[in-house]
Image 1 (spheres, rainbow, N blue to C red):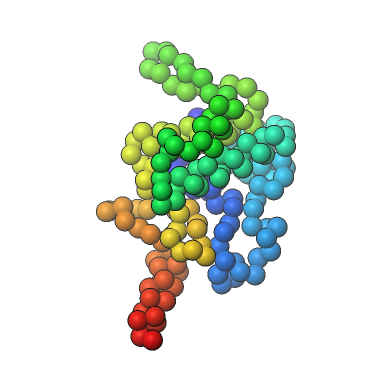
Image 2 (tube, rainbow, N blue to C red):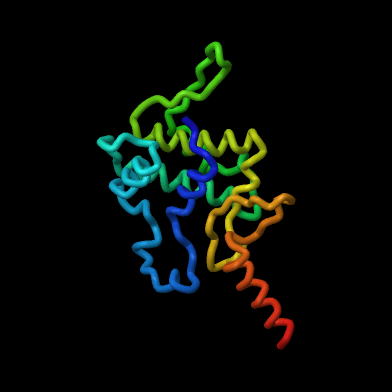
Length: 180
């Protein structure tokens, strides 16, 4: 089962790059929810992608971090999903197959439980791209935020994760700069 865009955004936000307000006081060790295999297992199970008793190895964690970094890179200003070698490398390691049955072709997750869960995340990104929804998933344009968010604006030109927080801070900065 493929992961939806909200789950993908939550996966991308397991790395918290926010550096303003109360987030500035957070220690670097708490900014990444995927620091250990146990952390990855907890995140995957809490999102229904992995059975609670499944094991997660250090190699699974490395693959998850590579997937997250590759997907976060795709949300940046130079989005080119086909040219990112990180995602190609990750996709080659994930247990994805294709099944052709009466319902038509579909992706099948094979292999160990943790890589199957990561394959569901990658499949969700691919399905979102095929549906034209992927461009709505963005990173906040504020340099001290970089939070992944779903752009629900009609014209798809949203730049900030929250207009009330990041958008307001950026617009206030520009206004003060012009006043000086």
